Image (tube, rainbow, N blue to C red; front, side, top):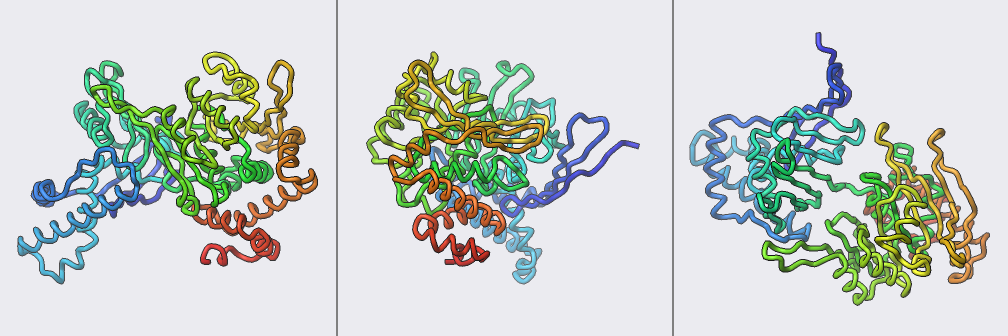
Length: 516
């Protein structure tokens, strides 16, 4: 008998289409098996869907190029979904097999069929159902000979029970993804970086560049973005309340922060979580290759999200990150968020922005604070030491691939005034043996900066940190974790801090804020 053990099960719903997920531990397999079961469509129903598809193709446009507004995309999807429902009902009634009263009872089944049609014509078919699983971070198609792989937040890499039918199907899927965002993949351009309309990043390659066959890798964009409260919760333990309070203070008082780490270590998640702590009376410009930063609704009123654009097949129309960074400086930003700095001109512009008094937050690939220092000062970036000293804090994210842990490895401040080399003061470190965070040293520069610009004494700065820790703990206990509730708490904090502290100290719940 096969050694097979069920380790997890749940239901996923994508646009009214339900799917059952079961994760198995099978003795002969090196990784868990991700079994997903979707509704089956009978042959007669498939014929009906073909008729509906032809009618909808004439009435409802499904090609969307260069649409980046999430609300518009959702409105177009809803319009298509409702049109599909009405057309299905019309066909079913015309066939005369069912009365209007009976049709109402079949509403749920019709919605499932409309969802399936939505995925086929507007989306990526069954891939849309898999991508609705909030436990997934990555989906990988490694050619036609291998099952589709997924990276699960709890179980790591898993093999799915699904497989592509042909290399042509993989190519068509890549081509479809590219067309919707103005990208192209073919024999002349066999590598494509693109994104889905939901914001998920896509990397595709074609044979023979990928010798085992055509591939698609989708980095799934968080549907419910992480906040600072998620990060300090015991469930994730990404950073401590003490570190979170210190970072909140840094964000409040406009200190520049650089987040570094390896691939999939949580750099962008941390950057997004920190950005939600910005006071709501300030103007924010975000600059990214693919839209990943999420901010609470409280900050949307004066937020300009900018994204780069690749050139068209004729080589025209490119908008680079450098173009956007230069442009952003003319838009009177209080805060500039840069998705990732890779090249020297970008880094130079970013540090120039810091030097001229703008608050800047960004990410870079590096595994330690020492590596960040070398990357910034040495070729190819080679930023002058005097410019790098505009940066206040460096935070390092670490990912343990074996255990699937993500932790804040180091937090350090850049000191100014060193004669030759850039001096660093380590503030906090993660201890892997105990999985705890320790304070390495007292802050020097941050205390000096806050004292100089706000007049706060070291004792007042420490008291402010303790207040922030209290509020974070209260948010955790009251399950105020999601991005918009966190945004509401921040709005109250910056507008009426004493009111919030009274709620916290008196042990009241968050209803007065969330429902107010």
